[in-house]
Amino acid sequence: VTGVQTCALPICKGKHIVHIDDSGRRFFYLEELVGVPEIDAMLNTNWEQEAIVSPSAVYNSVELFAGAGGLALGMEKAGFNHVLLNEFDKFACQTLRANRPNWNVVEGDIHNIDFSPYEGKVHFLSGGFPCQASLMRASDLALRKLVVHYSLRWREL
Picture 1 (cartoon, rainbow, N blue to C red):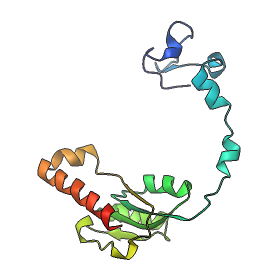
Picture 2 (picture 1 turned 60 degrees about the vertical axis):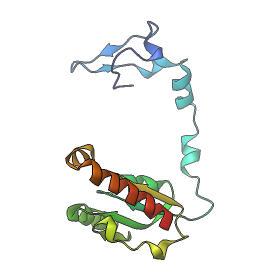
Picture 3 (picture 1 turned 30 degrees about the vertical axis):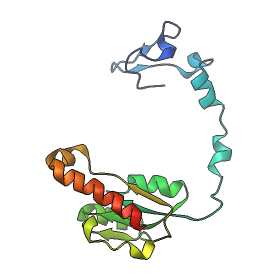
Picture 4 (picture 1 turned 180 degrees about the vertical axis):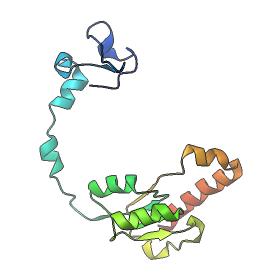
């Protein structure tokens, strides 16, 4: 198990040795953590069986601020059918279209999209709000308008 920051974890309180590799990264050997409830739960799952479970119905989703599609890919793996993905950045839209030609990618400003054809047909609305760097450049008023607009889009669906 890698990526250990400090021994703030309950498993570190003197019971388990934190190893350090040549790069200075801290880690535990998994076999040394057997008996820690969280680790045991992770090791004793039915991942293989859970991975083959299929949804009992088709669930449609709309994704706003889709970027290059990371969140959309996760939603697709979870069984959601994307009926619309919106993104403002043309290069991100090119990536979305290249990777998933069957997705309905709508390029442009969220304010200009007609969501009425999807009314009553969407089960999930997701959105990867713009990254912190973009938000820091935006004024507080612009950000508030964006959040309000996002909420209004959900009401339309």
